[in-house]
Amino acid sequence: MGDMPGIVITGASGRMGQMLIRTVLASDKARLVGCVERSGNPWVGRDVGEAMGGAALGVVVTDDPLEAFAKAQAVIDFTTPAATVAFAALAAQARAVHVIGTTGLEPEHLAKINAAARHAVIVRAGNMSLGVNLLVTLTKKVAQALDADWDIEVIEAHHNRKVDAPSGTALMLGQAAAEGRGVDLDAVRDAGRDGITGARTRGDIGFSAIRGGDIVGEHDVLFAGEGERIILRHVATDRSIFARGALRAALWGQDKGPGAYDMMHVLGL
Ligand SMILES: NC(=O)c1ccc[n+]([C@@H]2O[C@H](COP(=O)([O-])OP(=O)(O)OC[C@H]3O[C@@H](n4cnc5c(N)ncnc54)[C@H](O)[C@@H]3O)[C@@H](O)[C@H]2O)c1
Ligand SMILES: O=C(O)C1=N[C@H](C(=O)O)CCC1
Image (tube, rainbow, N blue to C red; front, side, top):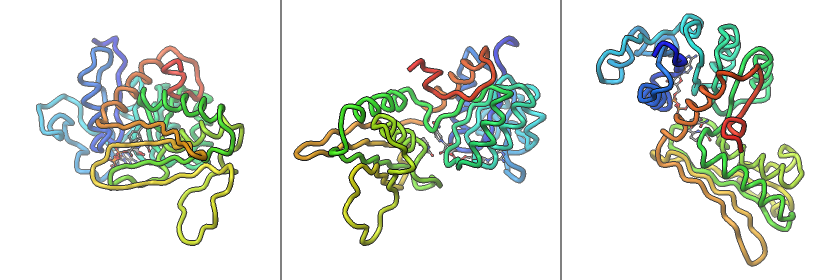
């Protein structure tokens, strides 16, 4: 038991935090050694099992990440961009594998995370599910096979509390389409159409975001040609797919050298 990697979950009271805690507790390959929340969160100072409405687990939620990370072999982090950047430096200091699911990361966040990856194992993906990572490889293949006569659109739908758009998954899919087509995504990205936009520019990759209710996550990659369309689709019905992928990444990272990895490395795709 003591030999199993100890895992810390950040953002413990969040939608993904709670799912990750349940996933680690159900695993026979890892143990929960810490939970972190932001200062002022009502879970701080409480036993996490009781905070989740069950029996005490002997793990008290803390707002001191370094104290928690010092006991961990891996930190699984689905929080916010600012928190994730701070955690990357602290996890590297603690020599813990840092698994990052947080989305909405801007280039300045990524630069700091990549700097931390010079000293630590960091696995980051906008979507940790097996299905979406397979869809990424399919998207690249289809985009490689088709020319710019086929318009590419990424359409995503998520719950009404999601704060970033396009989703991390949509950006992964857009990036794969751009790579398949041999173009730079930043040069062809068309997100947030509104008003008299003019006709669609040939070769652009478009993004549309739907927000509503409790949608877990749905993504279509549409290839629209003259007289025919191809639609590649992934539908997530349960957040456990992301949590299982994240735990798999935390275990995979245990014997790896410092570097920035993604789920393609973990899944061998
Ligand atoms: N990569 C994936 O597979 C995947 C899957 C689902 C969600 N996500 C992403 O994960 C992130 C979280 O999603 P969610 O739905 O769980 O959100 P959420 O708002 O329910 O949870 C985020 C939690 O982080 C906590 N937090 C914020 N700042 C903190 C800090 N400094 N220290 C400790 N905790 C802090 C918040 O208090 C909250 O409990 C989002 O960016 C989302 O897009 C990624
Ligand atoms: O619920 C979310 O938030 C999700 N975020 C990820 C994204 O931005 O793609 C993965 C799906 C769920």
